Length: 128
Ligand SMILES: [Zn+2]
Image 1 (cartoon, rainbow, N blue to C red):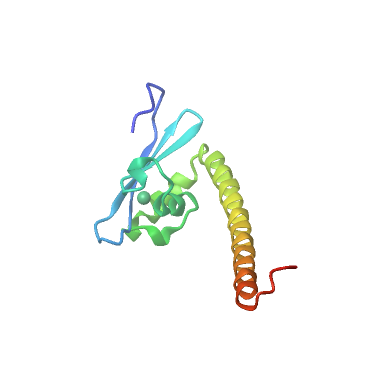
Image 2 (image 1 turned 60 degrees about the vertical axis):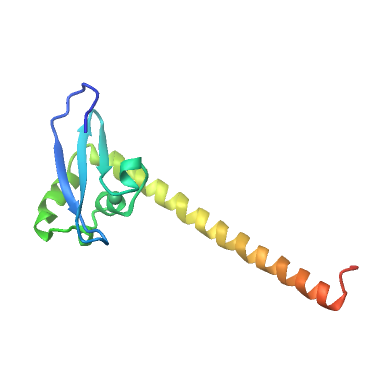
């Protein structure tokens, strides 16, 4: 993972559990004020969010393929640049949580309207 010519003095690679058995490499690199995170899973190589990145950003050691890497995970978490990433991720996760509630509410309204349509058509009570 390149840092486009910037100083890039901190790098670490963790192994994440995968459903296929072969672990995925998750790379962390300091790039200026930021931490870049790359995962080699199918979603990760497309630069999408994946559960491996999320787990390690939030410090979840259960995602480690090799439990002895817990100290490395803790060290990455202590990088000064990591605070910004952790804060940003917290905001994203909160936003996604709010969206999930809205989606659930919309799905409930959709079911309600469909149920009403079904009743009205069955009983002919759609005039009102
Ligand atoms: Zn991944």
